[in-house]
Length: 296
Image 1 (cartoon, helix red, strand yellow):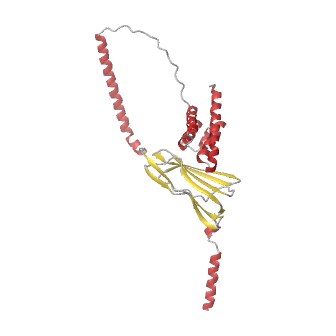
Image 2 (tube, helix red, strand yellow; image 1 turned 180 degrees about the vertical axis):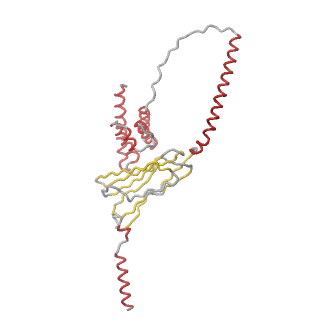
Image 3 (cartoon, one colour; image 1 turned 45 degrees about the vertical axis):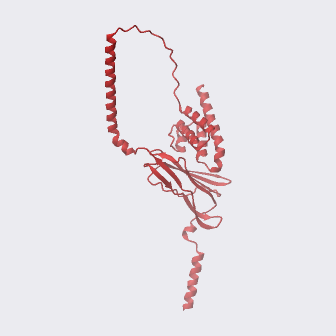
């Protein structure tokens, strides 16, 4: 009897070793070549939005990577979550962009995004993780404080305006009394040349200035300034998503420049160098088309 129990126990042990875990059976087999995460700004004022971009590259052609788990954003407000998938002969690139708004000052560290899969190299269940990202939220007055003190500020502003009007009236009275005490010579009228008013600035002027700065120093800050100016020219704020900007304008040249700016800022690392000349050319084309239409 004891020998039979030993044989039965050995059979159960062998079966347990040959049966894969349920979780491992549900994982896809993938070649994960890259998984990284970065923020487009390292220092953010309270109440202003910034973007946290997560990039994954796998050798397989897949329609989506639902296995990708984004980091917890804590107390920050999630304004948007946009995921872009592009496939080529080299595999699939997935870029997920979180639009975040900090509500309090301090230093925040986002844990790396991760995905679980069967590593195609080792055939073992593995967890692939991105690098953590640290940002510093600085200054700013919380919105609740602004709302609380708004009536007091309006009262103080009213008092200052009233005081200024009283001082102006007293100064005018003193001047009038002085003028009455002495004869006033007849005024000499001299026709002064009137310079034509400078034309008002347009979003297109801001894009032209930002393009000159980016071509002079193609760094991260000048790139984000050019991207923001293009977004404003499309009719949305600089903190909006690419989808919102494309939906806001029918201008084909501007839409091309918007797409090039997004790829240069948040596209796969191996495509950003090629996207930068495309961004400059597309922006120049849009500016030239606008200048021709306005007759400049």
